[in-house]
Image (tube, rainbow over all chains, first blue to last red; front, side):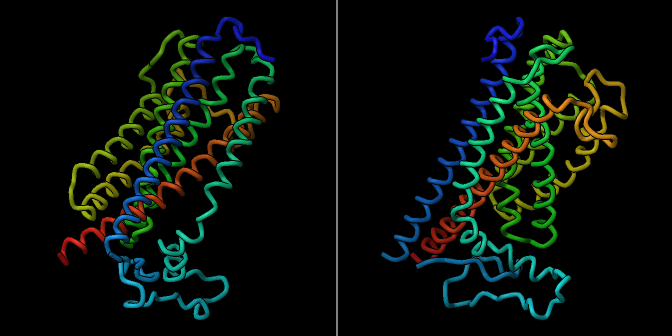
Length: 51
Length: 279
């Protein structure tokens, strides 16, 4: 188990890892949200074509 | 009714109705076993085939990335501290892979922009557009985590040295690419203008890579990709490489999902345009 204080550098180490987790999660969320939006737009457009 | 891109010919990459224009298949039999003609290359990379070939790939890559991130994090926090950097070496395990990806994604952006500009390839343009925001996020992350390492080790959050400045320029190229695309209404003109900018930005990649060799910088020289092998011990190199692989797989999964979204959005836009024209 790592020492949470990290030899006095805990604030820097945990901030870097936390920021990385946050940015990668936000990236994943954004990409999936955009994919869902595009899929919905295509379904609606195809629905209009067929209808 | 479904729409498809016109065969493997990039010049026929406009949307066509099923049945009206049969897709042209590259004559692979006419190509020698060791030769790859532009026709076969584009045939394999057409958006229709890309969509069917990558249907299940992102989920598999996502699971693999999650496993690699978990393993990488465990290895990163069980590795011994560095004799000089102490525990701040653990910042390297998220900073260095982000920096690697910032360069790799820009190389992908430049490569796909080249194919988009020269061959007017629809999939290449979609791939370039999809790569830009992901690459920008990795570059911003590399700058921010580097700053968090620099403060305790160098005593400063930022220094205008060649490596840091060239990475900032790389970030500005990403932002410029996205801003240029967003500022031009005509999708094709926007794609071409942004592709030219992306190609110009490729000049910056060797500057970023070799800045630590060409100038006296505060940033340390390369310690992994060196002619005489890595300068790190295995217990620090292993978590770094596992995290690097995790970032790479994660990017690949995101890129594929983004390209698929871009293709779907363009199909939807084309259908909406046709509906508006027919009304």
